[in-house]
Image: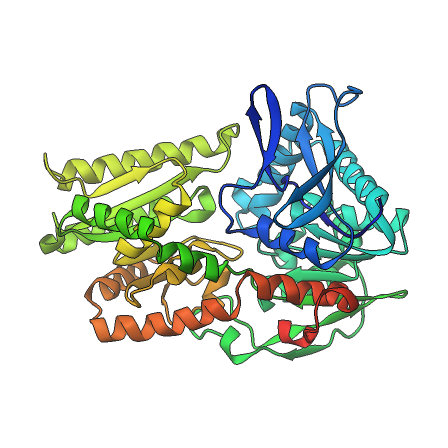
Length: 501
């Protein structure tokens, strides 16, 4: 059955669990996040579909179920699964996307690795995604494509189905032209994105960078701009802009630029934070840590996250403030992005070496100042830790948005706590009430953590109130409805597209 809305995203919208020798499809473990947000819109259309990949030993196996029907609390929808071999996944995702695209998107030219890229395979996989979306979409349907590993899908889809309305959302930073144009495939990528009707970004800066990349390759004439909303212009953020571009005029169509930060499911987190189970967990954690003051850092093991720089800042804190030794703990959660990627192994080793040195220098038989955790923490436990932590210390060197900082704010039902946030995280443009810091500066990092630890309660609560309001204003539903209003106003809401700016 043809679908009115097709979402194209590399992840499947469920988890596969084997029960009595049979595969069952169950909801993702955490209802918080992008996948359930996207699925929530399936109930607004009569027919909907999701396109994702699934690893398969033999893609030509006639027994492989390419299309399955799912019915869950979000409604009924079709999932079109692309069978990719392990080698295709490695080439398309682990190498091209993560070793070539990822460092350029985040401004790390020195990490860029062109040599192993198999561009034909990347194109082949993107073509397969586009074919699957075209096969699922009804006449005049809306197709919403997500993230940089599917950059070429809009262009291919436009060739196959000119009747469709196509939107692309970019979940990472979008760099300026002098960085983006390192990619030898820049022309194909930009041409594909300009085939979309809507291209979405987290913050105005990324939309402006996209326009600079377009202008370096195509003469698009005047690009109109409007003033950015006051609460999206944090004075302390390096990523704040005063104006934002709204559309690019091509010869045959207009590309709308939608700017809406991704948020978190505030109501879900608040409900979890208020539960008796979370209260019991938080009470247990407080008893275990005793009178210690807790700094909490949560992120992936990635060079963009600045984990080593943060650990070094914590070491300097204990060096210059002896009174905090035996008093302050750092809980540093650094989850490997993908265990199949050796590029992250040196980062993990460095984190372990620094954490070990700090514990060796400042620890005792009964107190270890750093707990380095290299595995994912169940979200229910994480929400309890958010309530226990005196400070959330989130200082990536570059980050498209960062949702951990928003989760921390949403979980603080007591209205207390301090958020220390890198000014190079996209979220910093919204969260100006955080203690914003420059993670490239040792002096700035030292000042920020001192300020957070010494902040009086009245100021903590005043800042947290402002942060709570900001996080609640732009939650997951606001993000999805705003983007989908741009994509297909007649079907998905009544919002004003200008609000995205």
